Image (cartoon, rainbow, N blue to C red; front, side, top):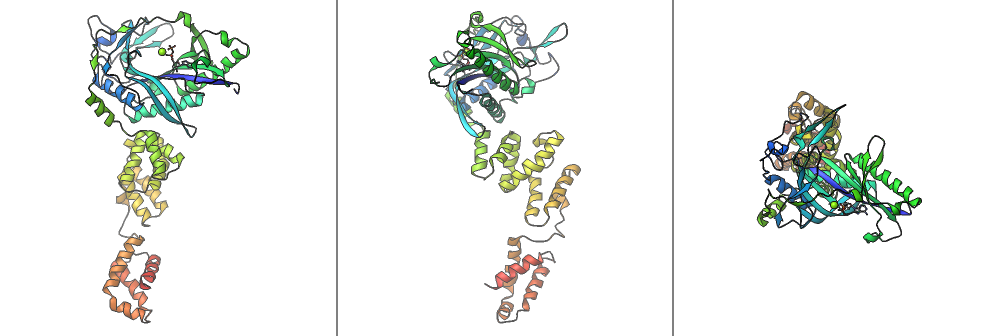
Amino acid sequence: MSKYKAKIGLEMHCEISKTNTKLFSGAQNTYTEHANTCVRPVDMAFPGTLPVLNKEAVRLSLMTSMILGCKQPEYMYFERKNYYYPDLPKGYQITQETKPIPVGIYGSVTFECEGTLKTVRVNNIHLEEDAASLDHYYNTSNIDYNRAGVPLLELVTEPDFHSAEEAVAFLEHMRSVYQYANISDADTKKGQIRCDVNVSIMDESLDENNPENWGTKVEIKNVNSFGGVKDAINYEIKRQIELKETGEYDKMEQQTRRWDEESGTTKFMRSKVDAIDYKYFVEPNIPKFKLDPKWLEEIKKSIPRLALERKQEYQNTYGLSNYDATVLVKEREVADYFENCIQLGIEPKIASNWVSGNILGEVNKEGISIQDFYLTPAMLKQIIDPLQKGIISSKQAKEIFQKSITEKKEPKTMISTENAQISDEKELLEIITSILEKNSSQIEEYKNGRTNLFDYFVGQVMKETRGKANPVKTKELLTKELSK
Ligand code: ADP
Ligand code: MG
């Protein structure tokens, strides 16, 4: 690939799954296997029905626009994109065109790819309705309207990616953003993320900042998994290089292809000349409306801390390794659990080890979310505190952890402080100091040569702690205190 450079642009669709209802109807916005159970007449385009815009969907799309550093519009408006397909009952999709301005334009995304930060430009982000879905059977196809009208965000990047790895790292980053900001579950298994991938190649020696030097792009439609995106890009780069070598690439028309998962190849669909004319016009049933600057300000303030920011904090403030921090921020619930531990006073490194080790191990084994894990951060503290004080050994700590989650009992009920040793230096020192304060004449005598009084002081500490003081530590501390 040394002679050529790939230019890749993504059109990433993500369903907003965190609204109660759909974009233009009161039907539930939930994912279910039961076809046609979340449907209202609007979703099936019954005559006489009219769309009512969902304010929460607008709020979440504006929040996404802000996270991407985009410019927000003064007015919101929608447009009709006209085409015929069985999954589109109205015969048009309500969407936003890029002019004058959709929910966001001209932003950027900074994400991590193979350990380094990379920034790509966002051309625009727009809000639209999802189409219904078709279920194909042996000799028939059924339409499921559950997806019809689900709010959908389409994010269009500039062609700033140069490899499949960068494109996938970006998608993973955006999935995390959608999850952290509570906009979407962004679950590829539920088809909530879908991508169109645009690929071209250009001579490595030419200036990529000049669009005139770009090659002719090929758009690959509807790639539904991140693995698919990676394979489709790599396949397409290889195919285009082969065309370049035979001189055919430069004669090629702009074209749309589709990713064929089974064969692992892209297949020709149509060329630019057969491009569909969508006959866009302003959606007359949703009058444009002004966005209140105060509302925009409120939305901006409510953006939560996202994964990359938290990860940098874990590394810079808590001194965690890149690897540990990555594990902790992978899911927001895990990061929240970890931060709860810190708030309770558990040392970050210790909390990190427990969370990414024992706790995630159990959570994954049980196949549950960490939110539903029996052992809360407060209960974890009940194990870590006595462990650090030397009351229990690390072997005992692991046993208590296991027993607590199997028997659903709080760890503190399993640690008998009655018989436990006091090994905590601070605690011992407090006891020793108070004993020495009460025995000033004995200290005099001790310092004047009655060294056998040392055992008397040890005895006093034992008496005070009913024999629980760690004898080795007690003697160590006493020697130090008496030599002062
Ligand atoms: P269209 O008018 O065909 O929709 P756009 O200019 O709107 O094309 O771009 C759509 C997507 O294609 C964007 O993600 C953009 O980054 C990408 N793109 C545009 N030109 C190229 C190119 N030469 N190579 C790769 N991707 C491209
Ligand atoms: Mg376009």
